Length: 400
Image 1 (cartoon, rainbow, N blue to C red):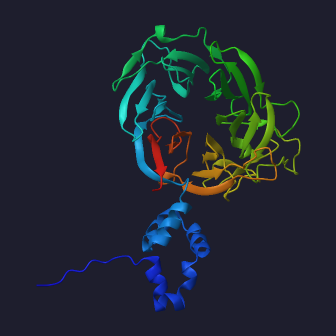
Image 2: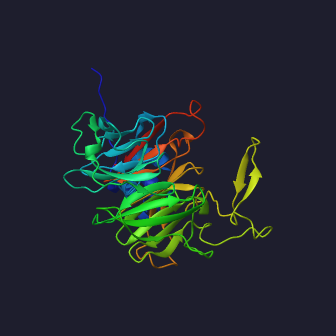
Image 3: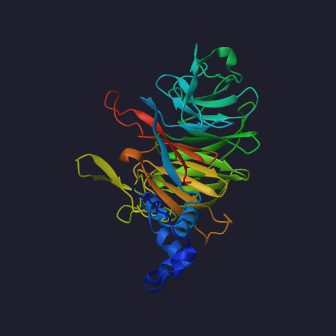
């Protein structure tokens, strides 16, 4: 009878007793060297290398703390979609603009029904902010009407739930110029609404979340200061701080929303004021038109950058603990960063832990964090109806 043999990974003690290892691979057993080597590998390369032995495997787990992998691609399919919001208890709600539905998904990306506009308590939904109460109260941006409505969603209970005008609890609806995103203060008493002036200047309004009355605003100054926003697309709130994806300034701006003051910005190239020296009085002082390779019009901006901690049109921003997540429209990637211990320390920058290429290389939209999972919309919808690709949501989960 033949003998069967099983291969066993040698322990680190046995490896150190090996003559070959002692003579030729001693450096590879050093904790510092192993961790440094694995830190240079992309996740898809390091996963294979980590299987070499226990030491490499344990160091790879250290390397991947806080890092994400693509767990599910193409969750849902939409003609137009740019927003996803975490749902209390796990999972997300995706705004299906074209069909006037709020699609519900489990933490694993399985469909759990939808909230559907009946006679139209909301239509063409954009960003959603959930108050987290028993009635599932939510503020919703109606994109085409450029206003906000507040509704009681209740529970879809695994199937579609049609909402009627009686579900609307705030009247009249609040009108704004191009509302882009919503976020609630930690206690839920205030609603922050990000707006822009038809793709130009931006501003954040602070509302009473119960009746929608405006109690303050920030992000727009008469003079040319760091606190001015330019076509911002996304925001997130943590504690006293509001993080804004300042899209055409190629940066993430941080404000204290309680005092309504600018604090600092992230984005190494976007962290300075710049005027094009050739035309300092230009209508758009930070960038200028140019013709790109396919003959269409584009723009140049010295603050755009492809390096870690630099951005090319950031559009989505999320904060969870000490982690900052930023999706880029034209940069076509997600950056995962660890925030400085003291956000007021202007000498300290976020540490870039991971750069995730956009699945399929498409332009990205908004994102959100659901526990340890990250959800991101993409491709971002562009072009006329009929020429657009379907939009979907990608789910990322931690490496294990």
